[in-house]
Image (tube, rainbow, N blue to C red):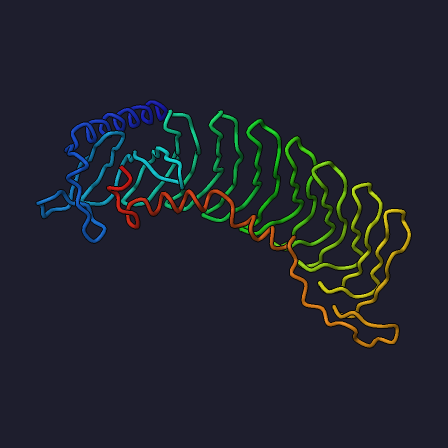
Length: 311
C-alpha cells in the first residue's frame, strides 16, 4: 500500500512539473534586462517569470530569480563550452555538465546548494577521462587523480578538509615515476624522491613541516651520488660534500644555520634563506585544480561578465 502511494505521488509530481514548465511564458533572450541582479524584460516593470530562449540557450526564472533549467555557453580562455544545470531559488544545485561544442562531455560537476560537492569528473576531447576531484561542501576532501589523454596515470594525491594529506605520487607520461612524497596537514612531511623523465633518480631527502631536514642526496644521471647536503629546519647545517663523476670527493664545505663557516666556526659567507622550488611547486599545484576554475566560470557567467558577450 505504501509503495503504491509513493509511486502515485511521484507520477503526480512529474506530471505537475511538466505541466508547469510546458505552460511557462517563453520569450527571446534578447529581451532580457538585468537590474540589481533581478531579471526583467525590456520595457517591463515586473520581474520576469518564465523561460528565456535563444540559439543553444535556455534560462528559467521565477520572479526574476533563476529557478529551473539553464543551458548556455561559457568561455574558458580560447575554448567555448556548453553548460547545463538547474537552479533552485538562484542557487546551483544537483548535477551540472560542461560539454564540448560537438556534444561530448567535458565535465560532470556536482553542487550541494551552490557548494561544489561530491566527485567532479573531467574528460578529454577523445572521451578519455582527464581526471577527478572529490569535494565536500566546497572543500577538497578525498582523492584527486589525473590521467594523460591516452589514459596514463599522471597524478594521485589525497586531501583531507582542504589540505593535502598522505602519500602523493606524480608520474611522467608512460607512468614513469616523477615524484613520491608525503603530506601532513597540507605540508610536505616525510621522505621525498624525485626522478628524471628517463627514470634516473635525481634526489632523495626528508621534509619536516615543509622544511628540509637531515641528509639530502643528489645524484648524477648514472645513479652515482653527486652531492650530500645536511639540512636543519630548512637551512644548510653541517657538512656538504660534492663528488665528481668518478666518485671521488671534489669539494667539502661546512654550514651552520645556513651560513658557510671555516673549521673554527667563523662565517665565511652568509647564505640567503633557501627558496624551496619543491614547496613552491605544490603551492602552485593547489592553485591549478580545475574545480575552482569551473566553479568561478559558472558563478561569474551572469553577474560579472556581460551576458550578451557570451552568446
